[in-house]
Image (cartoon, rainbow, N blue to C red; front, side, top):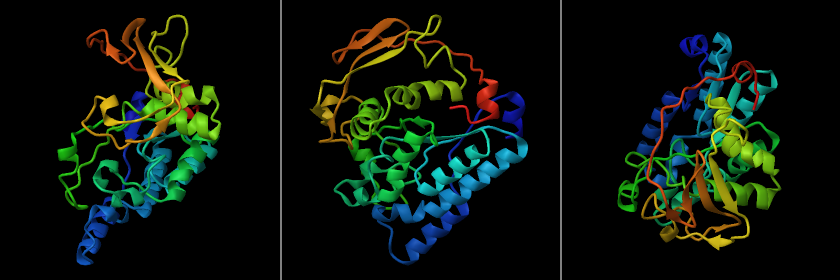
Length: 292
């Protein structure tokens, strides 16, 4: 944190309390509760509370901004909100599946497909995600893009051999629009903030990325908000399954534009990969206060 603060950089933190998690693994093993349905008892709310409070306190002590990834519990949300309330540069990220699924989904057939670390939690924890996105306590709805096929994802059956990573990249925008805008009345400007603009600001790529403006890269994701459809794995490309099977979306990505060039249109890839290394510079506003 001292080094990132001195460099004017943003430190990304996946915060869990290792002592609590390791103790919980041993306790669950003694009790014979090792199925994946017990994952949230190992990677639990207390772990998130202690680790978030510790990371935030250390960051405050050295004057470092931090980006807390994979917020999964109300305790984590509360810690971020309190820090931001006193003016500390703390930013929180959730993943689409933390804002929709709960620990009960571990008990479904192939329940491992809903898992990534830390773990899914309760309905109350899930609901706190949307409350916080709507009121501004959390800053981004991002992805955990470690995708595997179904045989790999479901190979592990216990809390000890479960495979992390979540096939949710392709569904992120559609889920965010459906759950946020269509179901909860999320303002469209705020929708753009949590899916694009805030990430660019926090990670030092704004205004080259994250805004439609003269001089900015023309990177656009176009959503068709008249296209209500039910998701199937055959619609997608990142794995041979989707945890969103049967989910009904209120919008569908119809076009992707990269620096002014149409890359994908109507599900057809028109151009191959290409890119360049970008220079990052986090603004002083983002570094010194909760600016987004």
